[in-house]
Image 1 (cartoon, rainbow, N blue to C red):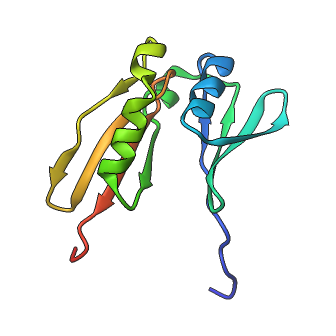
Image 2: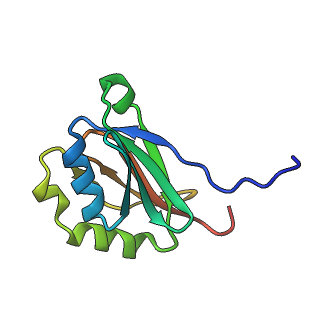
Length: 124
């Protein structure tokens, strides 16, 4: 490869675009409006994704994003404290699970996109 990749971004859809935008803003992620039907959310300076006002049930129900974090416990407690499960009808948050490769928990967004938040075991 004779070039350096700068970023990789996934596209996810939304059943209710405005609700999904509110949800991701409440997670603390920075929104930049690109078009009337598309925004980009920055998790931090190097990590971002596109949210679009488009919904196809089979696509959304099979969309998963893995976000590696440096401390899964701190991340979990911060997200849990936001009370998103109580604010959004379809949002679900699982407990942290320890697996052979590391630790993770799941967060379903309002449309059903499954987010994996996890950290890897250092010697894997």
